Length: 126
Image (cartoon, rainbow, N blue to C red; front, side, top):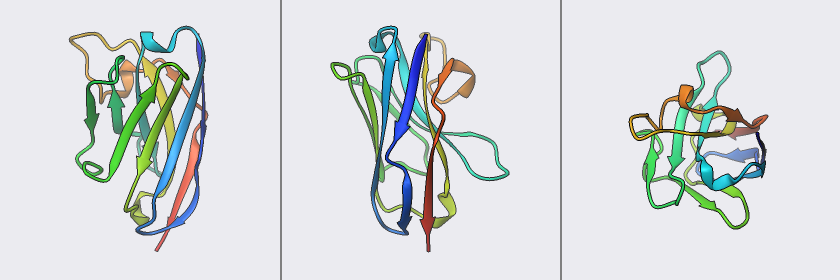
């Protein structure tokens, strides 16, 4: 079991930056690929970014590439998402997730993730 708790959400203006964090507890954090997903009102949960167990490989959704940076600190059992140049149409609840993604799996598939945080609201005003 892994427990995930997000923090750092809030209300910002378009173009601002925000940093989300996710604190993990329970089974060893390094067992898992971890990622961020988001869900806007009335929409499906979508992939944002993911990072490998060692932190050496990352994957981003095209819509955030170049603006968002995912990172992990395995010694501190934390995951971060630095979000720059936020856009108002991307107001959503952001979730961190952990999964045992195998070599044949997909980092961007939510079905690969078995543990989820409760979510952190990010609202971007225009």
